[in-house]
Image (tube, rainbow, N blue to C red; front, side, top):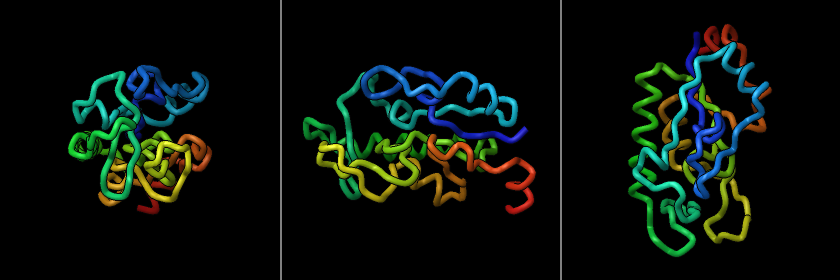
Length: 154
């Protein structure tokens, strides 16, 4: 069975900045589990950030909390640990939380805390993609390739 790296909040782990989660509907998780071995990670928790925690946004190469603290080092550490998990588990695909400063695969908030989206990736998403993983956000689940198609094209 192919391993799919997945943002832990999407499988219901309470690791979101506010202490909650972004759990996908159970029927969708069941369908994913039938096709893939899910490997949940939260780069922010792996980077030793607490839950709950102050909201953060990526501003260019830095990640800042809403109260102005620079948490870039924690985000980088978490990204590296998420990549290590992906490699250890043989993950070549990742389903990541959209707009997250760590996991956002193709659009993040601009760092102004005004809910303005810009093109770009979260810290972990960027590292995972550079390492060769194919990334999908939760709104693109339908685009995740069939296992056979993905494996034959890689």
